[in-house]
Length: 201
Image (cartoon, rainbow, N blue to C red):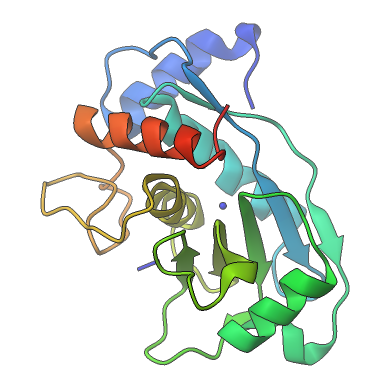
């Protein structure tokens, strides 16, 4: 299980969306997501892999009328004890290097057990760790990183840990290239809660 479009790209985006999520057309954007991307130097992440993952996130979120704004990753050189995800390390990293939220941190590995390649920290599961609210943490080992990041961002934007049993749904508990669609109700919740929490414009 588990973090850039112009008008000239619209026709290509429609084709990509049909291939990826099976939607018939791209809705007019109704919300904008400006995501801060923090890449830990030496983590195993590359700019090319991060960019490819973000393009896939943008295609998936487009079905909900959400446009992902282009961003340049923030590259941080940090001590080795901050290169892997754990709650204490994440809190220290967020305090030492504050960035705008929502944010995705591309880290080396995780020290959490059981192990997850990606973890979402929304409002509902950050009451004891407010420093890392509205963040996603992705390890370099993440499979299908663009889909995994879209899945975790949806958790953050909906402020919900719920999963779906619907075939092909992005929010199934197992990340898969086959699972990229979101229902109309999920899209509505994502936009409404994301706006209410100041994460979407």
